[in-house]
Length: 360
Ligand code: IPM
Ligand code: MN
Image 1 (cartoon, helix red, strand yellow):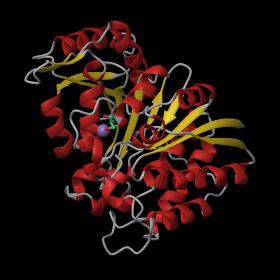
Image 2 (image 1 turned 90 degrees about the horizontal axis):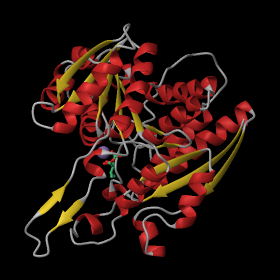
Image 3 (image 1 turned 60 degrees about the vertical axis):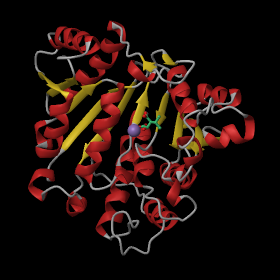
Image 4 (image 1 turned 30 degrees about the vertical axis):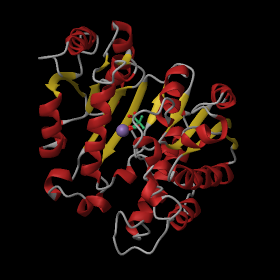
């Protein structure tokens, strides 16, 4: 298969972990005889420094024309510590998600047997946990009108959702539940928010077309607790943009490290693959960042294009790295292995075999 893939390393550890993902895709390309064409472009603080804009036109154009985008991470302490900055790196990512119409962000949270001891949660809670978060990605409070008063003493962010924005991701989530354990939990704050009540009405109506799926609703505050106490309660979690952002970071506690969680952001015409972790500026250039989330994002990319054997081969190589303790220091404090060593090991172990791992 011929795929044009745009590479946006972004800020902090983004470029380092992305380089490992590219190694792995190149290994897939060699092993399975595909033709992946990579083109790099700027986004984030690095783009602001060089062009004044977080998402330069040529980056957007490249992404629009590509079959898929692989993204690293975004954000720097410089901007984090400057609340008055008019242009922010994160605007690049948000603008890209919106312009490419990437309305569904799929974040699988599946406990790896070899990583059970990494989680601060009890082994019996974590073992067998396998859920996926369908996070709405182009609406809600992230994209509503924002305002700061002239004198700087009042601010507002409006949360808006339309029925069509809810129903398109809801259908996707129900279809995913059909292929999984047959359960969907809508997470909201319907006791307080009007948008949440709209979500409940729309999703409940849609659930009638999926009678085989058991659907329930849960308030987000309770869901945060249940994800920690009993993650096995969940199969597919469907939720809005901000709740999904928060709950997916929480999901990383189950897995043991935020450096292990990949995601896929899907729209009607475009797709982007991104680790859920941030830019971890303290680790930049130290060769200690965990490349696994970025590498597993390539497994999701391959799966998206129907390259299932290839996707399985990437996951199998990652699992092998866990078994052999070829891991970065976030997993094992005493580990001497760096980002690129782990990336090399995984890329070298991508072989044609017949194991099956469903990433979502
Ligand atoms: C994520 C990140 C982003 C988000 C930030 C960097 C804008 O936290 O992908 O989860 O909030 O969506
Ligand atoms: Mn986040």
